[in-house]
Image 1: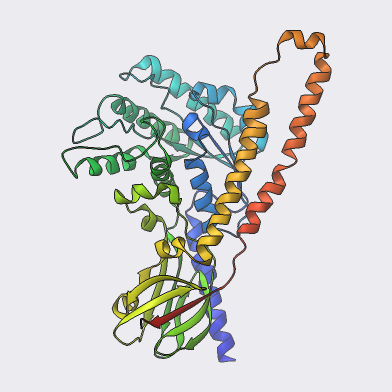
Image 2 (image 1 turned 135 degrees about the vertical axis):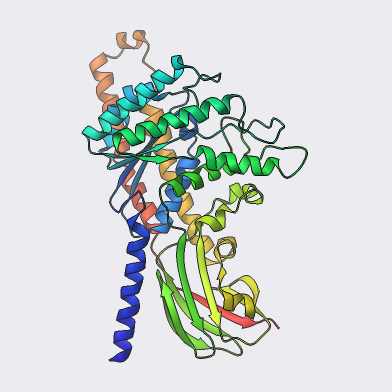
Length: 422
């Protein structure tokens, strides 16, 4: 009876922890999320990373993400195509990230700022009418590679003023203001302070960052959305062979081994970081900042211990480090069953979004007009009907791709072993 009560208390604590994690986060269970913007959004890097971090942190949620970024677009363009590209999905939440093109890559002026603000307000009006929660995201600064102590020069000064405009729109319309400009700028300036010569850290080009810069974008955006850093946490008393505490996970089958401990851990979330963005970690600890996958083991004899998840050795730690508690996120993402599952999630998200972009959004919705001579061979009505049928046929395939993502998010228990290093 007492054992049942104890496990009920643990289960309630886990549920309470999960609820607390979700309470402040901008996205909610059941959301249909549309991410609108320009070419930086259409790259499907930061948007994919935001999606991957979200679904791995809340694998039990039902979430749908759609990216409708268009290269070269500005906020008036987003406003004019809002019904076609946003409202058609019946979203409950959205992110809007415009500004990079809106300033025309020159000094700040009302001739560019006023249309920018009008475009944002037009989207705000349409979003409010459709009861869509909006996260208004600032543009990120350019990483030009110019030398000097700060990146806040030239066009970045214009983008900072445009970012102030984003806050005005968010405050005026009851939306969420997400400042990625200043967190991103702080990382650039910190990198500049390391030595006499600055080498760009974000890859890609100054306007369109590669994976390192877009992971930094995603991290800045997620923190602005009040994303929870905790994956899960567990504390084991190895001397007593019992669970001390568990947060967002369930620990079972604890048994002492020869000088170590073994147990089963069923997590309610996964850590995530895109491996292609690893170079940014020399400039900012965003892997740890967004992933706290904690393990604390007390009662071990002094010495070094191997930590294994499944059949994979993921870390070597001292008894002192284990007793203090350690973040295993980087280690778990490097090898073993957690790394394998996260790779499967990433592949499924990328496949789904690639299909939507290539076969539907860019492939049909944004496809160029048909030359007039074609209508002399195929009647206009017949051709438009075929295009509509093809559009509906491809849209019908998206739920199956969403389901493939969900399949990769089914959580399974993993066996942890902590044994002395021979």
